[in-house]
Image (cartoon, rainbow, N blue to C red; front, side, top):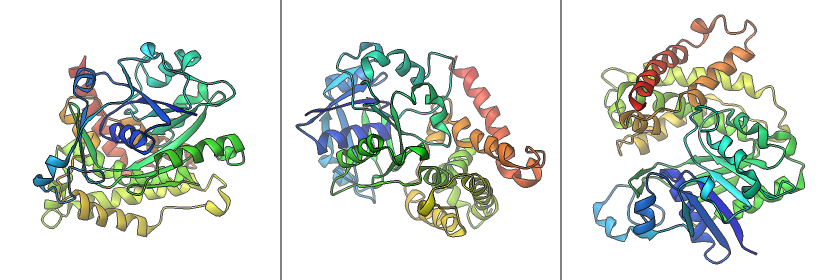
Length: 367
C-alpha cells in the first residue's frame, strides 16, 4: 500500500526531508509538495542538492565535489497552495515551515484546518509531523489535535535553500517523538510514529525515536536562543562570533550566560512533567558540549543560522517560538509571575526586547 505524504515548507530542511523520504521509498511512497517561491524552478528543473550525506559536498566544503550533486529532484506532485491539492487524504502531513504567527487564516495551521476534509483521513489516521524549531509550537494546532496525531521532529542539520539549490552542510540527524505525553500508551499514535521513523531512516542519516520530545526541544534551544538570536541581532555569522572569542570574549560573556538562563528555565518547566524512566534535564555538560560542537562544526563553515538568513533577506524572524515562548514559560512558572525577570534572566529578557525592535523593522519593510 502506498504511503501518501504531504510536505509543506521545502526550505533547506524541508527539501532534504522530502528527498530522503522519496529516496528511501522509491516505489511505495507518494509525496505531494506545496511550493510557492520556487514553484517554477522545481517544476521545470527540479531541485539541485549538494549534500554531505548524499553527494555533492564534503564536510570541509571541497568544491570539487559539486559535480556529484543531486540534480533534478522533483516531488511526485507539486502545487502552489493547499487549495490546489488533489492527491489527498494523507497518511502524514510534514510541516517544515518557519513558525511565524500571522493574521488568522494565513497561518499554515489555519490553512490545514480549512482544507481538512480533503487532507485528513478519518479516525486520526493522519499524523502531522512538525519538523520545526521552538517550544510550545503544538499549541497552534490545538483545533486539530482530536483529528490527527502530532509528531515532534527536532532536526539537527545545517542546510539552506537558495532558489531551488539546496546546500546541506552537516549530517542529517532527526529525533521523532509525540508532543503529548499522555499518548505514549496509545497504540495507534505509537504505530504512526514508528512507521514514520522507518520511512525516514536509512544507513546514512541518524534517525531515532524521541521519548521526551519536550526535553529535546529545550536542548535545541540552547543553540537557537543564543547563537541564532545573537547572530540575527548583530548581523554576524557563527564564524565571525568565534573570531571574537578571545579578544572580546563573546562566547564566555554573552553566549554562555544566555545558555545558563535557558538551562534554568528549561529545568523548571521539565519538572512539571512525568516522563518516568525517560525523565531528563539540561545539565552543565549539555551547555559546554553545545559550545564546543558549534565551534567545531559551524564556526569553520561561517554558518548562518536561520534567523540571520531571514533578517538579512528582510523576512520576519521566528522570535516568538524561539525566544518569546521561553520568556512566557519563565513568567508562567516563576513564583512571582516574572516580576524579577530582569534579575533572574537579564540576557534573554534584554535580547527579546532588542529583537522585538528588529522584528518591528522587518514588518515595516515587508508590507
